[in-house]
Length: 361
Image (tube, rainbow, N blue to C red; front, side, top):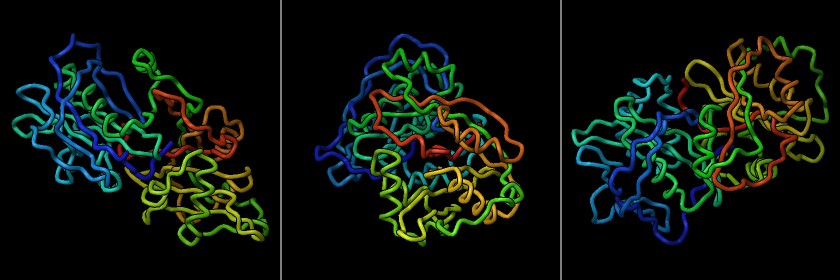
């Protein structure tokens, strides 16, 4: 899964103020779109932040969302980025600041912080819109000493409201699946096998060049054609996400085209952060095309370095393809969950899933 254009419904979105605290919940499970901690108590909310028909955030005359006399939920601002990075690092996350800033600049409307009355940031939530119907929850994090106060649940609630009625999806670690199922989320088709390997040019030395396939830098390919291919694979049009995240200039991105027709046969994008590369994503019509794309990416990187991929658990050929690469190791299984069914995807073309990730734990 991934992200796209934020087209907000014509009516303004209002966030409402919290009701009195509920009974204390169980310890925080983890959420992963990346991973995140979320408290199990929930509360309602009141007007404070609005998203206008033009998609811009406006401030109403009411006070910010307030959980108690000592903490409030409010929209995240660019000036909060250093404090949020510090929060994530304090809680054990290896954060890439540039990637976090890029996500914020791409879609700031559904990102929030929990702040004490002394100004300390103690919670963070990041969401993104994939298209008009689907949004992805990327991170929910609450400082350890501030958990079990309802902050995580409130962050999740305001993020869901800010998504404007879209389906909410996210990746969860296995232990947290029962928690989310009890809150009307269901596991969906794509669970992901997180594996890392060494992207080494030597692994692609025996791959022959097929003259029927042309591999080019993605930035040199007609964007509309790339977006059309991505939409056919994903079952949704996520042009903004494709342009601003997957194909942003700092990524290593290549596309494979039919040499005769010019049709797109697949593409790969590698993003670098926290000392490793991330296959984000790899889509291809065949194993041969997928390997050609990885070969080109390995030549661009030009050194053996650890690379992460999120392989669909039901993709036999994806599992086989990555097992051919050097020193492949299995890390964990992530489960895609959502509150409503998701659009159909062409899983036979997905070798590595895409996500919005700027921190590792």
